[in-house]
Length: 285
Image 1 (cartoon, rainbow, N blue to C red):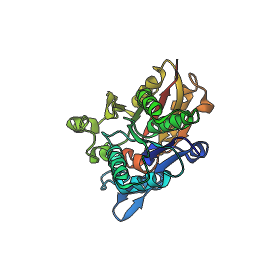
Image 2 (image 1 turned 60 degrees about the horizontal axis):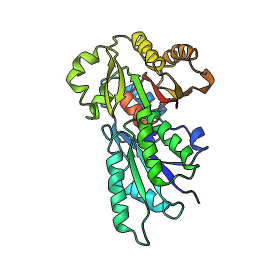
Image 3 (image 1 turned 180 degrees about the horizontal axis):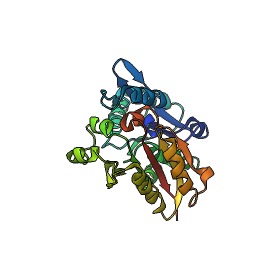
């Protein structure tokens, strides 16, 4: 029986190829756009957004519900000794708050003795959250107890970093979760700033005005890390920008180790078409 199991939400964007190697349970976020519901892959949503145009209504993203998470914890009770539940930044999603409520509801409603659940705020999103969840799934194999794993997860949360630029900020602004961008929305709309996730908030990293300048700033963001453990390049259809970026990243990090991926539906809804970003896990000294 596994000692501790890892749970996260689908805004982690972990590809199936990596999920198949480690024991991570992903609870889906939901993206609703009109009458359509998107749960997993982001490509169909981005294609629909591109066809609809920038001024169309934007999708809404819903975190896994308390009921969904409670059900997952209940199903795991007989398969492990405890759960480490790691979720999208509490500043950007209700997933963390819902996981806390699910933990409380599960603890109140169960019988037969305690079943430990720890909930961690990743303060990140997309493969920032993904790298954290995967790192903890690897750490589980060392048979550490839940307290030590939780402490490790909180420490590693400070070592994952996400930066990106988007063709439009409408999707992000519609979430109501980016208060540090909202006062500058008018000026940012006419430029292509490089954004990053800082202590769970989306903020401006550099006020670049064009896509090439944003791409340069994104590379500089990567280059500034003294040691890179893992890196993912995320995009929602901007293949030319990705190729330019990869040419430069390949000079400082093995190109074959860079994970190039399309984010899932939740993150794609926020970014919209033609966005590019990176998620870096710092290497250990």
